[in-house]
Length: 342
Image 1 (cartoon, rainbow, N blue to C red):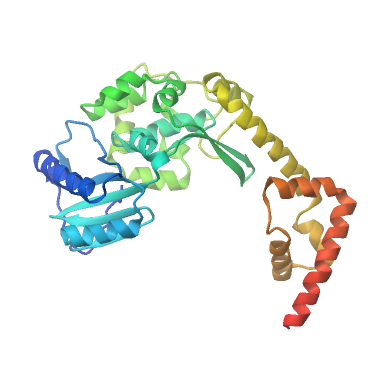
Image 2 (image 1 turned 90 degrees about the horizontal axis):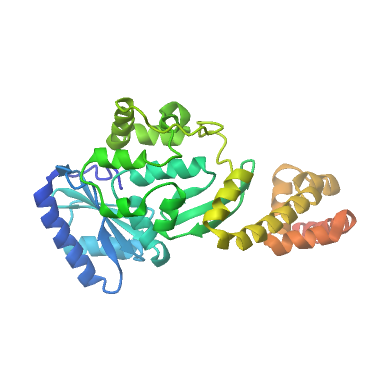
């Protein structure tokens, strides 16, 4: 999870048997020192012969707490923090402590388990127009490059797996080998090998996945298989983002009918935002005030301090004339304050 985070100390790969011993020791101490906070070692395929690091999910522990704990308990030769991950050396093994909010613990454990399987399932979800990640299944509402909102559809892993075309019982049984993980990833009717090809990934994903031996192994495994599903997606490329069209929406609401109310609420807010954007934007404000560049940006930040659905609804209610009067009035106040501070 933390990659090769430790650069200034010696680490080595642990054989499976010694890894299991250390994992039990670290987890037991973690649970004793952070009672009431769930923690779990992320499971890898059971036949994995050796390990380059140990990934442990920890419920809502600020990274400062985890860093102090690592230093005080294990006296590591090196500690590195990166976002919600604290990596430290423990008896020549890199241990990664991954902090997660309570509401995301179960979904994160499911997503990060079994090596790169969550990444593979995320590719299927992407083609279905949704996002699958550590916080569950969600819909991203966007226009062009602007993300208006993101809403969680479900945190129920069994329901998410069924929606993606997988057998939850098979997933819960776990995986002995990488081949079993690969076979499971390819078992959905929505599978298409082309969506995993490097040339069909975006730049960031391509660079990341080229470094991952399990992902490279999956590409090699697919080359040796015959009869894999090749679902006829409109495009196998990742560029252009998720295609959340009417087909994707119908499929989603069939599986999660309770999401319809949330969807309609967001879409209503989205429509109001579009109307507000036409009435009130940088170009409109620049034409009214004559401001440009840095000054326009500063004034726009003053005007948009509120934001959100209520602000957008107020803009729409004003109409073109009301927005014109409001901007002129606010510009007068802003200009006067600029003169006083000069």
